Amino acid sequence: MIKDILTEDLILTDADAKDWRDAVRLCGELLANQGKVNEAFIQTMIDVIETYGPYMILVEGVAFFHGKPGSDVKEACLSLVTFKHKIVFDDFENQEIDCAFGFGAVDSDSHMAMIMSLASLLQDTEFINLIRNHGLKAEIAAMLKKY
Image (tube, rainbow, N blue to C red; front, side, top):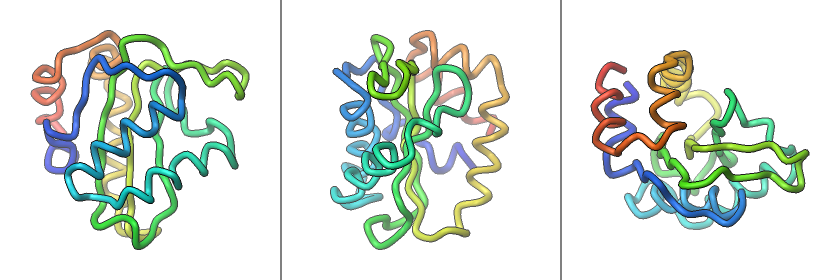
């Protein structure tokens, strides 16, 4: 499931981001550039964090950025960005991430299978170590084929 959605063209490695908002934009731009979401969706991703805080840090160093489901999302989609340097959430107790997934859903139900696959992926310590320690895009894509 994940391997069909998180394709190599939706992965960006060793990206530069000046702050968490920039990190969100990078995740969202990957989705927008592939026609998965409208540009307006990226702002909803930022709005979610500004409203609820960084609750989307699912495992240490890994965030799951998402916006509100709706018409700005054309299909359930996922992106992955790894960062050259840790991204600090200055306005949220200095929590840090090394990488982030960007996620879009068309409604509140249809993406549940993808979420379950992602949960399995996030339990794979080899995968987490790879994305948090500057793994190459090809290495990440190869590992995703298991999912």
